[in-house]
Each structure stands twice: as C-alpha cells, then as structure tokens.
Image (tube, rainbow, N blue to C red):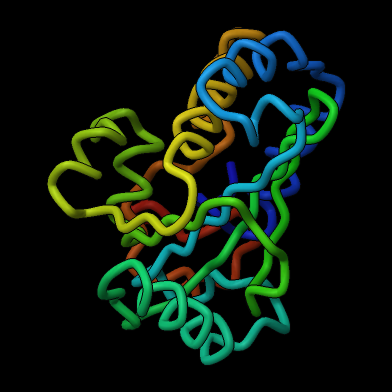
Amino acid sequence: MPPYLSPEWVRAFNDALSGLDLSDAVAAAGAGSLTVAQGTFSVAQVVTGGPGGLAAPGAADTAGAAGAAGAAGAAGTADTNGSTVRTVLTVDGGRLTVVEDPTGAIASNVTVVLTYDDALAIARGSLHPADALAAGRVRVRGELSVLVAGQAILNAASAALGRTLTDLTDLTDLTDLTESTDPNGPAAPGE
C-alpha cells in the first residue's frame, strides 16, 4: 500500500473511485450548500510537515511550502518543516478525483491546512474532522459547507466501496520516505 498522500496513493484513490457514481450523495449533500447543489466543486488540502520524499517527483518542496504559506496566511499558521503536499479533491457530475497541485494553480471552493500527522489521524479515523476543526488543528478558508459536503461524499464513497478509503493507505508512521529506495516503502523495523 502506498504512503498516504504520495503520488502512488493519489493514483490508487482515483483508480478505486473511477467507476463510482456518487450523484445521489452529491444531491443529498447539496441540500446544505448552493455550491454543492450545482454538482461541481473542489476542496484543496494543504498538508504540511509530511515525511521527506512525500511530494510528487518534480514538485519542489519550496513551491509547495510557498503555496502552503499563502494558504496559511489567510487561514492560520502552517508548519513548513518537512514536505508540503497540496491536493485537490474535485466532485463533478457525481465523480470524485484527486490531483496533486504543488503550486496551488487549481482553484477551489474551500482550502484546508493541517499537519501530516493530523491528516493521517483523520484518515485513520482516530481524529474526527469536526474535533480537529474545533481544536484549531485545521485551518479553513472558503466555504465550510463545501468542506462538510466533501466529507459526506467521501463517506458515501467508502460505503459504496464496502471499505474505507484508508484501506488504500499504508498507515504506518513514516519518518522519512527517502530512507528507503525499495519501491514497496520503508522496511519494517528489524528487517
């Protein structure tokens, strides 16, 4: 399984959702947001302080950090130590896709900024997104209703797949992806 938010993870996420039509979930989520009701919206996620080597090949950490700093400037303070990864989840016509956007070139309706540890905890289910938001661990800029709808649609995708989307993720605590040249990821302790 690929490390969370790595380019391989993004591909696995999109592959898992490629044939899934979530139009009903989008329509239900649209009841709370005019933007979502239109059927097309985007949620940007800026994750800071990730393990080294997490960013897409060719994406300079400085570009990602600059994008995170810009997003954080409006939404709060971001940790720029380690890799910064910016992804954009787009819902369009009942389909979900995630793309890497290291330079922040893709417009979004809402941007969330959080640390890699918190993003991974949310993915694992050990940190509820609302609790992270209430504790100030997630900074949001844009339409909060779009963020809530995006989470509801991701939950519907998990239910439709019959598994959680985190099943696509290597949930081990990684300290530095660059320590391993093995394409299967870092070796387990003692190997």
